[in-house]
Amino acid sequence: MPFLGPGFGSDPDAWRIAGAARDIGRTGHYEASRFPGAPVVEIVDSLLLRLGERALPIASALWGAIACAAFYVALCRLGARGCFWAALALAFTPVFWIHTTDAMDYSWALGLAMLALAFAVYGRAVLAGTALGLAIGCRITTAVLILPIAILLEGRSYSRLVLSTILFGALALAPSFLTYGTRFLSGYEFGRVPWIYVIKGATRDVWGVIGSLAIAIALVIGLFRLRLAPRRELLAVVIAVALTGSIYFRLPHEGAYLLPAVPFVLLFLTRTLAKPGAVALACAMLASSILLGVSEVSTSADRHLSVEVRGSLLKECERRAEQLAARDALLKRAASLPPNATVLVYEQLPLVEWAAPKGSPGFPEFVHLLPPAALILAKEENRPVYATEQALDGEQKIYRVDAEKEWGVEKIP
Image (cartoon, rainbow, N blue to C red):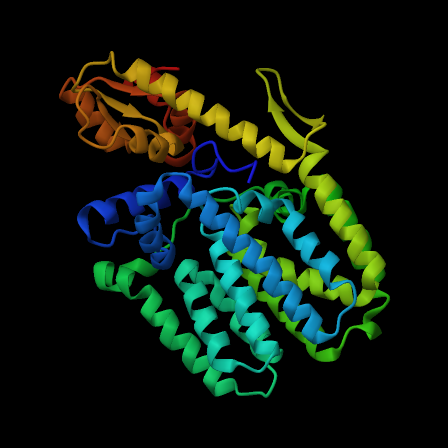
């Protein structure tokens, strides 16, 4: 609770979800925050917003608690040792903890997926499929867990699990399909990601600095003790990691994409290291989230890594405050610009539109970026175009143009 806010989180998609929920509440018509959409989260959030903005991160916190509790119940049923500490290790894992304090859909999806796992190990195939189908309605990529959960299903009622998953998954995604047709399955491409950032996303962004080191050591020890892991569980772990990893490497833009595999990695390590290992992992994840972190510092001369005495979660809270301060400064500056101006704000757009929705009097038009053709048109029509420094970098990265020098776009703080 102390880490909820300010705002909806540092990820622009959290603000997109909140914005879509607000629009759904106002119009009564479904609107996806981004494709393929998260209808379960967006529609429920549209109701929760009536209680205030803070209700959205509180809902994420509750789903995070459900995920940890369900994971604990599943481990107990499987007969693992150190179940409580393994559940704490999940709770303290930096990428998970962060997204239980914002308005993203990760904790919703994982909470329902862990409920599906708990139902499955108790042989409740229909309930497991129902929970997993709803999880797919939160994040469609959660569908990769159907096979690992089916492997751990007690009673082997596979057809009931699959059919209920398909039914409730289809119902959960129906608002997006009925609104956009098959276009809702579209994805976004952001260009090639350097391999060093792919590795960073799969390590530091998921486990933190201390946590990554602890996981590496634990995996080495665990591989030498494979015989302690039941074959069925080992197969489920391998499939969960392989399928989740394949999606991540297809679009390696955020380490959080690997979140569905995190409980299965912890299941494997809990089995092979038993209670002492689970205790050590929980302590390492807590320290990784709170005590120590590494960030990239960019200067005019170079870029370098800086070690900080604050972990991923504390850094996230600081980042949120900085984003809101930057947005408020931008809005103050924009209020003095010509009303026919266009302002490129890149990833700040969802934050800006939350405070100043489209058509707000006294403000120019805010946009993500503009392609070269749109910049040419604006210049021909003598419409002034401004951009933040981040947006100018985005124009260079995505459209390969120097908007400031080539098209006279003016930089604003």
